Length: 453
Image (cartoon, rainbow, N blue to C red):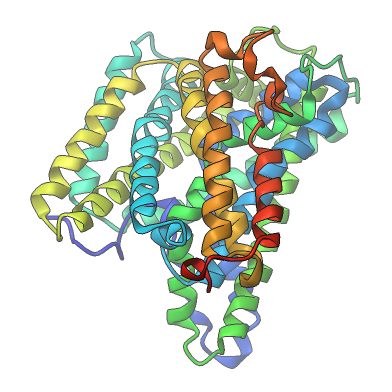
C-alpha cells in the first residue's frame, strides 16, 4: 500500500532536501549548495531537453536573442517563483489567496489538470521517440500502455528507489550535456544560418512556457521551503531566506548555462540535419554526432528513466492534491491515479510534436496568470494589496483570452481581426501591457477598506 504522506513521493520535481549530513558547523556553507542542487533538479527534467536544441536549430544568427527570451520564461520566472515561496512559506493555494479562496482553488485544480493531461503523457511519448523508436518498430500506444501501467504501480507503491534514481540521473545527464556542448564549441565551426522566426525574442519566451517550470515552481517549490525550515530550525527567518535566495540564483545560473549551450549547439549544427527534423530526433542526432552511438544509447536510457520519475511524481502529486480535497480518502487517491494514467495512455499515444501543439492553447491562458501571481508575490506588500492582486489577475485573465483564441486559429484573432489592436497580441503576449498598467493604476488609486493589508 502507498503511504498517505507526501514525504516519500518519488518525484524529481518534489526533490526533498536532506541536510542531515551538514548539521555540523563545519558543513554549514554546504547548505546553500545542497539547496541549489535540489532546486536545479526541481526545474531540470527530461522534457526540458526537447526545446533548446530545436530552438537553436531554427534560430540561426538570432540564437542569442531566442536564448534571452527562453531564459526569461524558463529560468528567471521559475526562480522568482521560488523566491515567492521563500516569502510566503506556503503552498500553491497561498499564491492566489489574495484574489480569493475560490479563485485559488480553481487555479490549483486547473494547474493539476493540465499537468496530468500534457507534461505527464509527453514523457511517455518522448521516451518512445528517444529510446524505443530508434531500435524497435512498435507503435506509440504500446509504449504508452506499458509505461503508464508501470507508473500506476509505482504511484500505488511509493518507493524511495525513484528518489535515489533522481539524484543519480540528473548529475549523469548534466555531465553528458556538458560534454556535448564542450565538443560542439571546440569541434564545430561557428557558422549560423538565417533565423526562421519573425520575432525571435517573443518566440523564445513562448517556447519557455512549454517547460512548465513556472508551474513547477508554484506547485512544488514549497517542498524546498519545508525542507530548509526543518533542517535549519536554529537559523532565523532571514538566514533561511538568504539560503533559498542564493541557492535560487545558483540554480538559475546553472540552467542558464545549459540552456544557452544547447541552443547554441542547435544553431551551430543547423546544416547537419534535415530542416524538418523533430525535437527528439535532433537531440538524438546531436548526441550521436558529438559523442558517438554508444553514448547516445546511454543518454537515451538516462532520459527515459528521468521521464518516468517525472510522470510518477506528477500523477502521485495530483492524486495527493485531490485526496486532500476529499479529506484524505484513499479511494479518491486510487481513482485519481487511475484517471491520470488513463489520460496518460490516451495522450501518450501521440507524437511529442502533437502533444506540444495541444498544450499551446492551455498554456497561453494559464501561464500568464501563473507569471503575474509569481511576480505579485515577490513585490513588497505595500504594492501588492488584495485590490492590486485582483485587478492585475483579472486584467491578465481577460487579455489572455485573445492570445488563447489566436492559438486555436479563431477568426477573431486572424489578420485583420478585431483583436489586432491589442499591443503585443500578435506576439502572443497581449496580456503584458494591461497587467502592467493595472498594477500601476491599482497602486495609485485609493485602496478599498476591505482589501487593505
